[in-house]
Length: 107
Image (cartoon, rainbow, N blue to C red):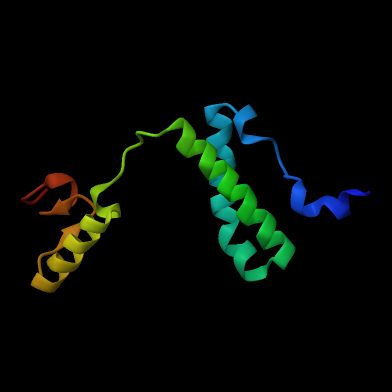
């Protein structure tokens, strides 16, 4: 059996559990950077391989970082608050109401 007969059972790249933290982050940054082009222009096989590799890399990241920081605005509750604030006309930026970094006045 040649390598093409086993496409669905082999993984491309280094097994993520063999990567140190810095290497894992570099792999994640690369795969996220190439995601859009793969979706738009890659073959179905390329997209399938990209999906599988991204899932394995992200799974390894989550396994190593079960208590990672989760931004409040990236939760359902936070999204509901953004919607309510938008409806009320209250500006909410990256750091919440009141402007960048919590500054309230001029410079």
